[in-house]
Image (cartoon, rainbow, N blue to C red; front, side, top):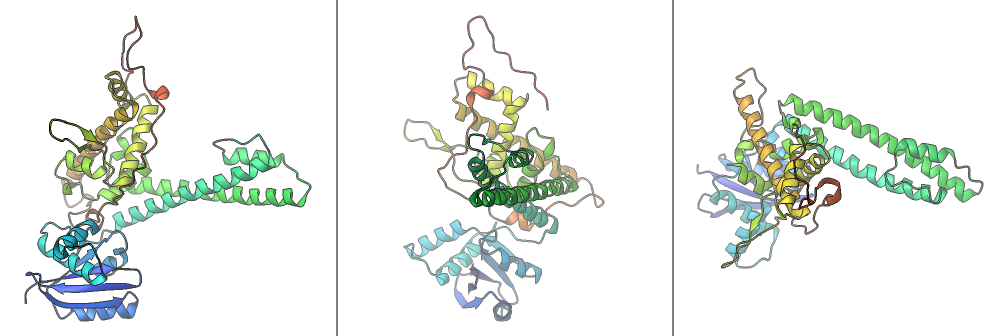
Amino acid sequence: MEQVVIGVDPHKLSATIEVVDMHEELIGSGRFSTDQAGYCAMRAYAKAWPDRVWAVEGANGAGRPLAQRLLEAGEQVVDVPAKLAARVRLFDTGHNRKTDALDAHSVAVVAVRTSNLRVLKVDGELEALRMLADRREALTRRRVQTVCRLQALLAELLPGQAKRDITTGQAKAMLATVRPRDIAGKTRRRIAAEELAELIAVETKIKKATAELKAMVLARGSRLMDIRGVGAVVAARILADVGDVARFADRNRFASWTGTAPLDASSGEQNRHRLSRAGNRRVNHMIHIAAVTQLRLDSQGRAYYRRKRAAGKKPQEALRCLKRRISDVIYRQLVADADRVAGAGPGGHCGASQESSAVDLPPHIDTSDQPLPDPHPRRYAAPPTARKGQSHRPLATSG
């Protein structure tokens, strides 16, 4: 029997499927709930085509639960990026109106026409790394919210004594000096104490998650943390989102995926480039953290940044150049790690394969125009031009 493709438009409570053959002819369709009964009914319906491939839209988002269930059941699953399916729907129908059936059909057509869609495969270690990295990010956001609430309460209890970056020890000392007598003040102090206790608990969880991430990164044989500015959190996020670096042909493709490669905006005789707002914004943020950290340290990154400033680059432009260079360094390290693991033989630790689930998940694309904060130029950069009688010498570099 000829192979068929089952396009899936997943939602939280339902999944719409359309079955097409290799000639893109519709041979089946249906809408099923995502509970156990609906899932079993969908699987039973699909058994009519033994040679089948499931094409799930957005397996890193709404389609992840269904894709993981299909993988655990031994089904062959490919991931279809939502943007690619949207383009096919627009070109095939001539309009941008969408329904669940149209979406499922577009997903199936993409799977038929595209030969290099990445096949999903369960990788327990990488999946655990991704979940733990997401968990730590959520804890970090929770910590920021708790600190904001605590500072607001302390500003009312101790006017004029608020600190910008308060620690738990400082907050505890400040609360110890407050003994309100009225009921509003007592309530405010009690709530502040509860917020402080929550802050201590969250910071404890963050430290534990960071230690676990570090152990998992080292267990995978990665040496990303050897790069200045790349710690356990940055390395874990990069590994979780990149998966198998072999899917990138070269460092330029990797830089395009991380959003650190400028976009060509030349027209006619004008030759210019503009900042890329696309790419994986989470990995781009991790590279930004590494860049800012290098600027704070006596590193090769700081020397490179200062050379760019001395050449006339603005602070933002020099930082973007540094981020692109860090992206190249990360790519080379990922390739070196993959080569070392591949050469380790059967006794070595097996990394993510080309069919790894984490490898094949599409990057999170965000076209937001909100730029990341730039470092203060006075903290890191020497003046663009040397003063009279002085010469520019880069600081001693390390690492």
